[in-house]
Length: 386
View 1 (cartoon, helix red, strand yellow):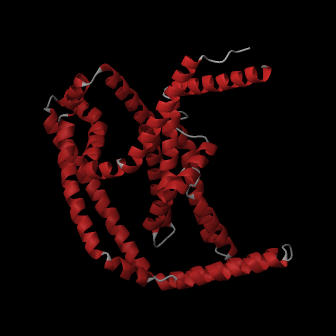
View 2: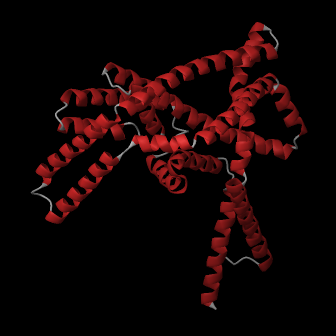
View 3: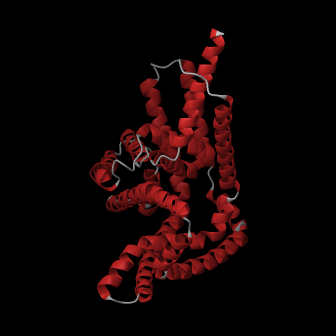
């Protein structure tokens, strides 16, 4: 029979667990209260550091091939990158503004069409299920239908525009602050990219050995979790966005860019995907007799499903993804804690904890918890025997 620990060993064990618990609570409090304002304060430099880290392999390769100073190469690469990104963003922004303006102009027609479509679907379901469901269930369904139709009919974009107009001074202040942050980001991107090897060497040279080891672990975690998962999901969502935009353009959808952007955001969230909107949309078209529109939507969704099926294993890889149940847990907990943003961040944080476990960060704590459980069990057994 396993003997209980001595009092000295027990004090050490529970002391270690207590210290780790206090440190965990302290870290969570710091992250909750201090991290958001710090990130908001230093976000231009953090983004510039990420840009420098991503561009470092390309700049190093060009420097080796062209034998030109790193500062000159960094300047050219950043100018080309920001010019291309600015052109794409300007084009997309202009198209987005045009479609939003058209949406405002046609809002009443679209609102009436949505209410009519919902009434038609409700009538179809009532005829289909009227003889199968109890009267109370059908009455409740009719009440819900009327409430939804009333909500759709009461939607008024003019009130929303008036409310947004009242926020104009705050928007102007935010734009000016954003402009200053953008200038700082561009400048910091050049300086950090140009001096990235020297800054990295100086940081590694001055840091103690244990700090360097911890930094290497954190870097490995960042690359495996965020560098793999986020990059792969962004690539997949970008591919889905292109497929949606091209598909909606060819079928003559008036708001192709708006719909493609919204569905691509849904596709970025694990498990959710663009099919959660496109499949019900196609079903509604079938009920309304719009068979051509339903077929077009299902063809676009089929291309998206085929694209993800073929590209996801190559882009994402087995080592960076989450199982469906873990993704669902991350989405649900993130939604309860952080709303829509939490639905995206939740699976990522869960992936971080999983990779921390793979790196053995939690192993000492788990070993101590197991030892504490065995000690308690041994004490209970010895107490019963006495």
